[in-house]
Image (cartoon, rainbow, N blue to C red; front, side):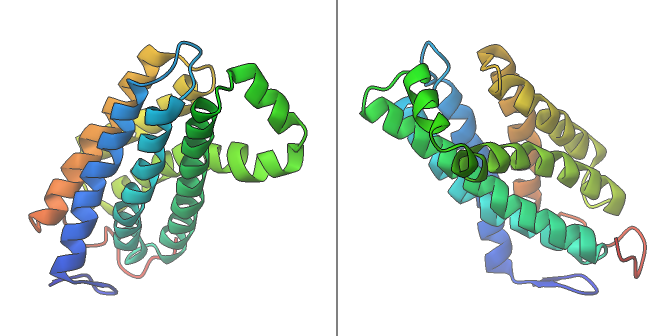
Length: 209
């Protein structure tokens, strides 16, 4: 069992979180290879994105729990953003799945969403933007708490910044770079969790943010 001054992480939970940190971004990276010619996820890509978001979340929450042990407010806010961002990932994945299943192109899909502007913002656009924001914030948090090697949180931050740059205009080449920049450190953190090597100690004691 791994402990910090304020959190206890059972070995089994740590292992599950580590596996999720590997499988989640791996599925997400694979999904980009299934983008359609107009940059949509499609049936296979959409399914992979949705499952990626489901599997990634437990691992992300595990990392935010580590942050919360020394930065309670930051860790709690980050965990909430992880849930919202994962919801957005599932929503976008299912959007791509159903677009492909029903033969809708990009414009038809956008026209349909235009009839529900507020709902579309709450279900897709705002949660979707929350995910890369959360990734960048996680990178900063891991750096502040010294809970991960520098190259890991640095690469994670770069991946988070590149995420909207590639997804919003649908530039596949940048998307692959963003996927790799997030996958490698996330999988590395997952491996460290599984191996009980992740430093679970605060950078400063009794800090509140």
